[in-house]
Amino acid sequence: MPKAKKPEGKLLNLGAVILTPGNSVQNKTGGWRALRPVWNKEKCTQCMICWMYCPDMAIPQKDGKRIETNFDFCKGCGICKTECVFGAITMEKEKK
Image 1 (cartoon, rainbow, N blue to C red):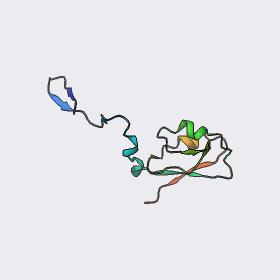
Image 2 (cartoon, rainbow, N blue to C red):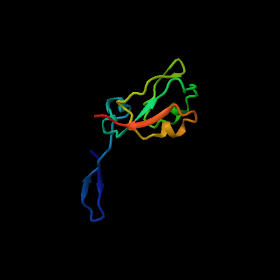
Image 3 (cartoon, helix red, strand yellow):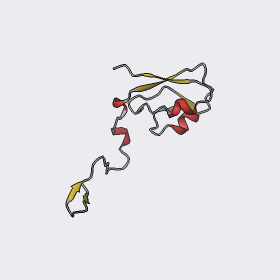
Image 4 (cartoon, rainbow, N blue to C red):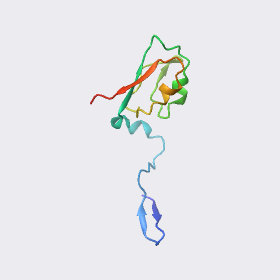
């Protein structure tokens, strides 16, 4: 684990650091989501704007079209809802 120097010269462990590249599929981060995006297929025009803006790549696509959200990786940030100009995505309270 890399060390960071405090101003007094003491070494500290760095936190929240993933040192192995390409391992994001191993880190399922959707467990702490408070809001869940709900996709309305009838309102969706497949413009893929939600897919482009998703910071976690939680909106998979198949044959150039959006498919169901991968909730293992969705953190519930709501960017997809904000960017959807067609109102095809709403945010609902997560049910645990």
